[in-house]
Image 1: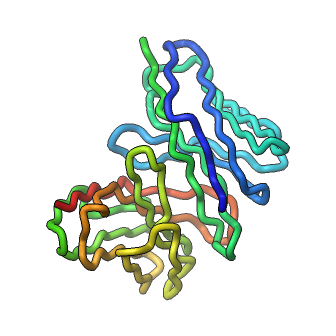
Image 2 (image 1 turned 90 degrees about the vertical axis):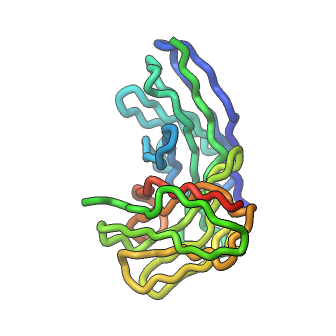
Image 3 (image 1 turned 180 degrees about the horizontal axis):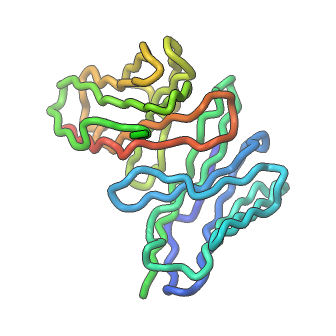
Length: 114
Length: 114
């Protein structure tokens, strides 16, 4: 079945760049997503990328997609303490006739040290 | 717009009790879903619905029932709670049509089963 893999932890210093990596299995996914979860809160969509794109930039966020290797990354420039959260990568499940349900990775906990 | 709302925010049950987690959205979204989030497991899909009167199982449906009598509401029922159902439950909605678009999440219900 489909699977999304992420490293579980990342620690950076304030002002540095953070890079969170993700690998996925479903090559038919049209969109790939990054969600952010702050402590005690629900999930908030950060950004998503269409599968025919290699890169998408949105202010401090850069998403890179390597479709051949099924590798997705999220770069946060000038990381701030407010960026401390869990970041989830997600792909769309199309197997078995499902209706585009999202499959999530286990999440990467980003800790930003002042 | 209130977005996706969930009640209650917190709940403690004893083993064998039943309860219903409520979810409502006011965005006229056809697609709604329930996930559970456990430490180190990411989010796993329980049940989903692509419209009123239509529901289907996700990855971890055992022990849970759903129904969708209106577009707005998608309650999740635990018929006989078990300690393994201790988790944080998230409801989500989006427009239908397969892939793409933002999936909106509710704030979550934190359930403890003793």
